[in-house]
Image (cartoon, rainbow, N blue to C red; front, side):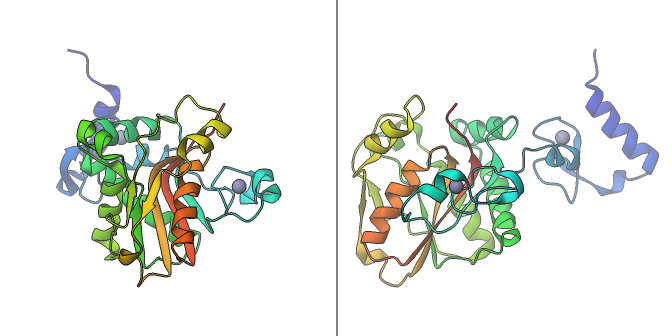
Amino acid sequence: MAVNPKIYHGVYERIVNGRFALLGSGLCFLCDSPLYKYESLLCTACSKDLPWNIKACPDCAMPTEEGVICANCLQSHRRPVQNAICAFRYEYPASLMIQHMKFHSRLDIAAFFGRQMLKHAFQQRISLPDCLIPVPLHPSRLAVRGFNQSLELARALTRVTWIPVEYRACTRTHNTMAQTDLSAQQRRRNIKGAFKIDRGFLLKYRHVTIIDDVMTTGSTANELARALSMAGVEQIDVWACARASIV
Ligand SMILES: [Zn+2]
Ligand SMILES: [Zn+2]
């Protein structure tokens, strides 16, 4: 039977270094090598190889040289979102992990992304919000999928920060088309007026953070932020797992 060379290397390295005592339980999600106790979901090598979104526009999280503001944000008028962060670029293997989280209801992957978003926010010195608002799914889509990945990401963040999740503050009133194959302009039109805010849930919050899985043009987050701003929220940030771009 052929042995996965990465597993072989991982076991060999542990025997040579006499570190079996430090082994935890479980295997790396990406390479199947045994995890150490201090590792979670991914081994250190796979984690290092992820497409970290280190240098990015502070306004829209698009990767830029030296992390400066991007040309789009420089030209745009006042935007409802103050700070946007995405822990990763939407590239393999982060894209694979997001698909597993979303379509196979993997809560352990949501927990991993929650930790990475928080770490990223600390590194960017972004202040923590008063509450988290996951991007809602339309009830009919939620019924089919049975899982809102943004809500699970927000729950993962709550477990480590104690920041409340206000998932009832916002509902999706239109069952919009999937945004995947649409242009930037079509996406804006498609999502317009899709959210309804219940102000009663937001009265005590001045600063809220929208939680999403992938940001592409930012039209969904911007539309939700616009609705929150009209409901009286003063500061709105967006945290997402990954930043994609339309090619
Ligand atoms: Zn690995
Ligand atoms: Zn930007």
